[in-house]
Amino acid sequence: MEAFHLLNFGCRASQADGAGLKARLLGAGFQETQRVEESQIAVLNTCTVTASADAEVRQIIRRIHRSNPACKILVTGCYAQRAPKEIAALAGVAWVVGNSHKHTIAEVLSRRHGRGITPLPGNKAGRDFPLIQIQSGPPAAKAESAELLVGEVTSEFHFSPALPGERSRPTLKVQDGCDARCAFCVIPSVRGPSRSLAPECVVEEIRRFDEAGYPEVVLSGINLGRYGLDLSPRMTFLDLVERILQETSLRRLRISSIEPMDVGARLISFAAGEPRIARHFHIPLQSGSDRILRRMNRRYWTAQYAERLLAIRERMPDAALGADVMVGFQGETEADHTESLRFIELLPFTYLHIFPYSMRPETRAAAMESPVPKNLAQRRSQEVRELMAEKREAFLAAQVGRSLSVVTLDDFEGDARLALSSNFLKVALPHSACAPRQLFDVRVARSSGGTLYGYSESRSGEDQMGELAMECRGC
Ligand code: SF4
Image (cartoon, rainbow, N blue to C red; front, side, top):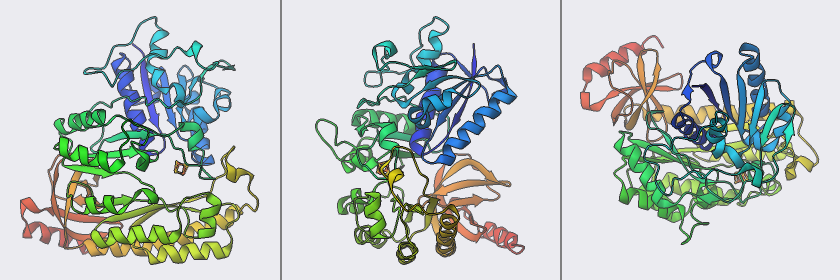
């Protein structure tokens, strides 16, 4: 049986796609290898959000082909959907499968051997995987020696459940695609229209993770706040959250990222009163300048954004508040940037994902005038970063002495098991023998180098506090 090596790139929704793809390949009888040098097939599940994301994929394809020339490379995901011929031209690439045909990958590879696909255990109605007749879809082009399977992304939701046992905090993608047209964003063209996973499937998957012992599941989507608007009967994202909490005993539900206009008073109020929802909101801002938000075709004003963020802070003083910030967007002046900096300074962010604007072909922004030179965009990124570092430090320092609810991760820092708090902070637990995927309270003893150090409160320990304080002397 052929062995595959899977590499995932991009956002949490893409990671969730990758976990489902892996389950499909294993279910079809392929074996996974940890080393690409030992694989017959390398599967790259790609992202195309920036030019550097594309460049990274091309670089890895070249590296795989150099280290294992016999390995056949299959490229799928957003980059494959956007620029299939560009990828197909690279040596070693045998298949380019767009998001439109991603759900057929296991079938496509299985058919090479003239065999069908083994259904996944427990594959019930609602989680069916009909084979797409590629010939009857949009014509599959051929370029170089690679086979291209790329068509239009439809309004169907193709869902592949992941196998439990992967990560300590699994991600469940409940929504795909986007109908917004932010000027810089290529996602709507590579992910198609907004569509939702049926709520009964969501509940079933959450139960599956809960029963497998996962305390936390992350709900993700491309534009999560649009969840349910395509379903019949229509429902809202909040309806889904309420239903999950009513119909499952999952202990912690985390919302991955949600657009500002979808964080309404009802959602804030519900989350504030529900301890099973992680104290964590990630709300993309992009710019703190109204002029730039308009150019970006974002559908809110800074005042509305601030109002919502402050409402969360008021109801949940301990919550993590994060955002994506894009600097150097087409036409961004020094005055726009200063305005954005001042806005960010005023708001209680606890972390930011800061990235310079990257031109994406066939977006509205690509045709805009007054691009910002690269060195200027880098300098502006650095200024936002420095501003955020101070806020971050203050937030971490404020946690010392507090009790945080955490889920233990698979990762370590040195010998210390790492855990993630409800409010999205990494806590190292020295002297702890606890296993991953445990949910409990820890007391934070100190903050150092961007990491918190703590101990389990259930193991009650003045001694542990003493040990941690002693370790602290050298730092
Ligand atoms: S909301 Fe805007 S930025 Fe987000 S995926 Fe949709 S188009 Fe892209």
